[in-house]
Length: 447
Image (cartoon, rainbow, N blue to C red):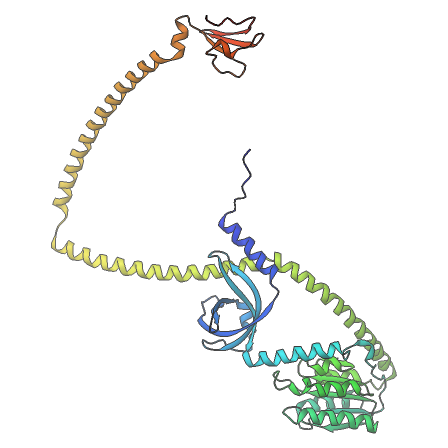
């Protein structure tokens, strides 16, 4: 019994390996230097990330390339985020990049993640320690730069929504080495004086380095120790800092923070705002639950989404486009050179006489070929007739026609000796015109 063989095509094997790589490796960050950067007309980017010992082929497809904050260049040291995959047409291992940032920002991001994990383990982000914002604050404190755009945005919102509520500004630096100590002192002063019953900690947008004062452990500890509820409005909606996780409420912008702490003057609108805050908390919880579910669906979709195959085909198309262009250029050069040579030869030599001579030779060769084929065919037919006559002479069927018979056992094998047959055994006697099924009554060997 032969064993079953599992046979895969090369494309099937590469597809399976690609799925194993994508499922076996989570999304990760890789640091290296860009080299061999290519920008084809499709808008995709292809390059190599390398260090002193090794290199890794990378692909960054057009939708992700448009959202980059940096401009990739050869020699740039970057931190790339993405997934491991396989370029199936060539069977090459590669890294599919989704985000990219300068290597310096990567170090700050690492410090940010380490501090975030440490503070989360210490319970500073726990939901049960967060305080509710007052529905009708008697005084609103603002901790921010007195000259920045953020304070003007907050004041404009508060003036529009609740001009009757007093505002107290605690001026601090929001960037640089002096920022974090000043923010800590302002938080402590506000809690010590108790002149306001809610605090807004805010500043405008900026890079991760610009916002670093709000990622210091001292600021996080001061926020955690605050008896007054604190709402943060730091940067833009996509910016997150450690202060946002520790604060009682995080608003996406300074203006949004002012909106959250300020009730409307009219009693009806005040009630609507209270319901709005309640609904917002419910939405945040629902979004958090759905976000987790969405991540699970995204992982499933990542394994089945046609985008992976489309990216592979797009990369293959770019490669074929470049190869075709180079091949056409080489072909055109060869044809042009050949044309020049032929033009020169045609100019000096008329091919008509030589063509006529070749035609005569072709007809003569054709006649010779026909005669040779006929002779060879006759020779093989004679040989075939001779072999057929010999075959007929040696055929066992011819022997049967002369009155002889074959004795076969139950397995169809020829019996050549009486010693091979037992009494009462069934045998078949084959004659010229049929078979006889018989039973052996006795055997009689020669004396």
